[in-house]
Length: 395
Image (cartoon, rainbow, N blue to C red; front, side, top):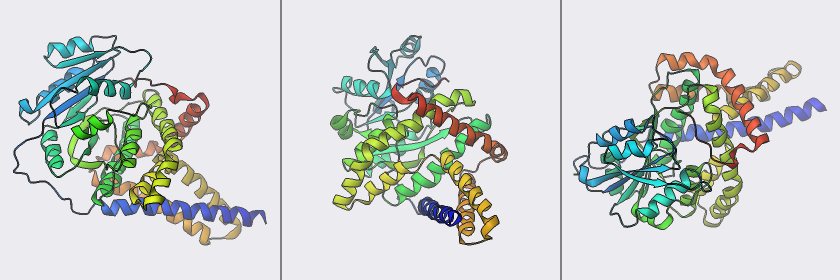
């Protein structure tokens, strides 16, 4: 009797995992659909304000300023604005030495990127620009970024997310395994969703919004995952986020488990907070208006990070395999073999599309340690309520 109950529960869970994988594979196939690219012969027309939020970024801000100064776009059509937010180092002095606009903000109560962006957009109300681009202070921006975004704006896009790539994917097993999540999302998930006319995720870096959006909303999201929160708010208001894979920006990600722990905890638990806040509204709007995009965003909130998904999947697979010692190879084990097999192929498809180097594949050997670490910091973060306040990720 007990074996039958466990078998039935595992079968239901296996079918749920198959549905999740089917969703991911559907988007992966969609990512290969042709893209409607803008006319490459158009001269630049959009005026951009490039906002760079910076909190104690003296180690990296010069590289970002140099990158933005080297953009292949008419200098009179874009202005770089660095937001020196609660800085206690010489970030502001470095910015001013480069003759770049620097807005200095000090507010010990309202700390974090969301507050800084909202304040800066208010300060720029009288500045003429057609769209605002937001990049982090440790970012290298591809020279053609603004030209590509300009073309998409002329196609009618109002909110754009560029391809957020990694400078150091081979730096360590940590960076390689983090990079794996990046390529699966950007090359398969977000691209596929945009090809189908749906809305992409905002990633906090390499984002662009038309003046209409910034005037209407400012930056209303103030949580520790302000990009995800704003993305959901835009979707509820009927504005989609287009993922533009040709518009590239590059940034470093933490090399060690210790450096990454704060950032990962913020992302994971911040997503749970946004899910609990916005999931009912997305489902309600989806049901009321039969809005597929709202259902898609709701599903996106429900799917855990790949590492947690894999940890659950492998634990349940081994449980099903152990049960097969009593039941033999049956429907249950076949379903779970299908779950694991389709997941493995999905990972390798993402790496192949990204043209990952052999070092990335080699570092997959560290995946078991990475998965255990991810579960550990998720549990620790939950117990300590680690997302209650913004904490800077160490460079």
